[in-house]
Length: 412
Image (cartoon, rainbow, N blue to C red):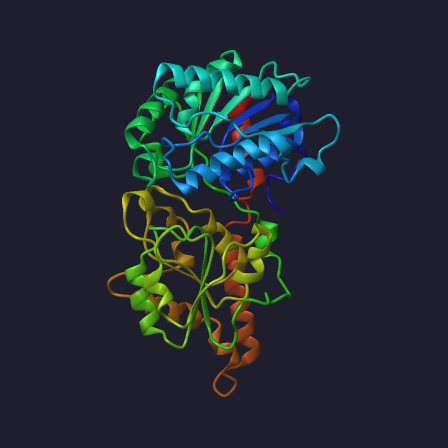
């Protein structure tokens, strides 16, 4: 059992449960670290969750127009609910608001208009909810323009990415807003140690990603219907974007024609290079709770990332989820692997990615080689290796991470 699940944890949470106003991404869009942590914190406090206010100015594109239409429709015709709303009793509240603001408002009029709209939305949605002594949680630098709407409530900045290296961001504008947010924040939580160097040491605290250990470590007995069988599988889930090294994947797929390569997630880039192969499958997005059914039926879980600043600064959630599942892992090299390296197969110049996959799979292959090996002892060894991999993250639950955060919230 995690050391965080104790009476001491409950005592800390019960001590001072101030309302939390969260500027985050769209709730439910993807299981971000902010969502995981706030989900735990919300068990004992009111939460107002403000969906994304944007990191770039809108354009007259189909995507942006549909996004605007969706926000207006959600506001006018239905009240969005979180997936934890049903779990909460009458003394707790979790309110989600789709801000009808102009993203990255850069002139006096648009910013003033956006502030007036958001103030009205918050008042309308939270009528009757006591927001006295609230704390603001800002996951987006652009939220700094709206802090004054909450009577100068103390603010903490949760930095999960290096926004200066993210694609699709108005870098100059966001960088300016981040500087302002740093100045106004009591504490700055970073998702990786690499990000710590960006911020004043007296404010910055490293809060690594956690993991839903019970979900990913519990043995599954179901094989998804859309998972192709009959050959060994190398799988990846997450955003299928430019941070995947497609050139590396092409070389790997060519070297392993007898393997199947499975990709789960939204496609946000051109994948024609990969779609040319008959042993490559894109299965689309899946509910987060269904992912263990896939990963535990893969031979190898892969992290084939490009080597750039964004990746070196990141700390992918899926790394700990992969570890919790016990599945062998093959990855390119990046800083967030530190602390887990002995449990991973890391590809490099001397060990190409396809060879690393074969080596990772070798830990489970001997179990079926009845002629040469002691099957029972091999199965015990495989079970031991998987257990060791799981144990590396057994005390890194989201409850643990939320407890770390709570200690700082109590000081605000």
